[in-house]
Length: 179
Image 1 (cartoon, rainbow, N blue to C red):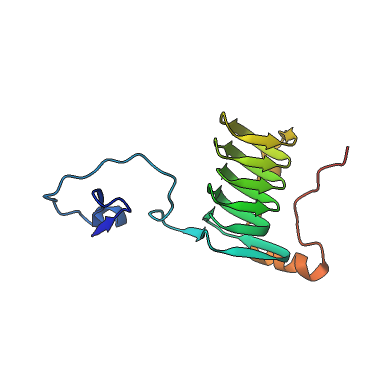
Image 2 (tube, one colour; image 1 turned 60 degrees about the vertical axis):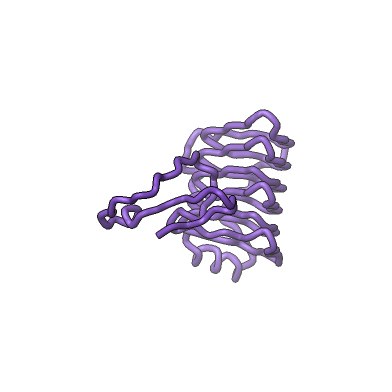
């Protein structure tokens, strides 16, 4: 199976070995490419595309896997891994084991590993175990590293948030103290 990239003279070739079946030898040379952060090839990944805007009251998007936001979300995100792409905009809390920001986030970020890349714009507090801010990233907020990493573990059970919506709380994350 061949997948064509957007470049007219470059072809990315995959074999069925990536899904656990013995691969057949290929006559064409393969093109080695550095990882780009594109999730289209990763299993269990969800993408909110550039032309998609999700907004509403008490919106919580929960995934057991990977979520990449290239569009706009006005609500909270929960996942094992959340990636805010260069064109992505999130207004709300982002909570995941791994959070990678290339776009903009207005709200708190909670993650065991948080990475702000050069195009990132973050306005809000970051709660983390490991934090990396690359030169060029813009960050306006406070940083907190809790003593117990379990405080950063996101709740990925959708029914937890459905129950919270019914009683009006909507979020199980402890609110940071107002100083």
